[in-house]
Length: 200
Image (cartoon, rainbow, N blue to C red):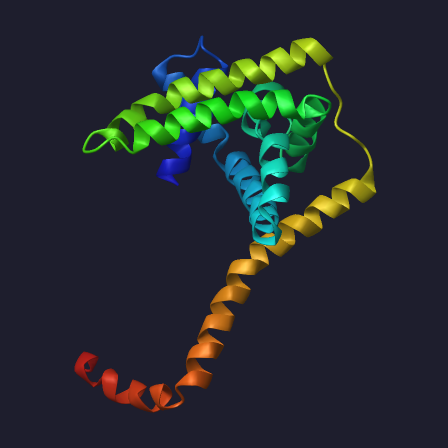
């Protein structure tokens, strides 16, 4: 919760630069659950995309790159932020990908610097967000104010993709446990003895 709260405060102060530190943390708290929900949705969709093939995952990553900015900028929430992000990127995918790739490469290079790479990468995060915010606002100026698509079939499709991605880790865990039990049935027999040391 604390990590998401601090991320929300950082996003709030990046999107609304007039906010002070206290106001930013208040905004981060106000958006704690909406931000958590958007993170859950995008995580499910990206897990599905990158699990199936790398290319769909990369396409999804660029389409939905601006959902967090839309959350704080426009008041849209949940799936609407992803659909709206896709509308802004539509027709400019390659242009957007090129700009995002640049900042991703810089971030990766900075993070692998020995000893101080992680610290520099952490300090570099606000600049990455500002860079992405400018890409989003450039698209918004270029295309004008976009409306959330009202196509229910498309919305259902993305909910299904999200659901698959959220289920995949559970299936992977279950499959691993099944493989462990079937490959080594004696493992179950040793469990009671292994717990003897923990009994009082």
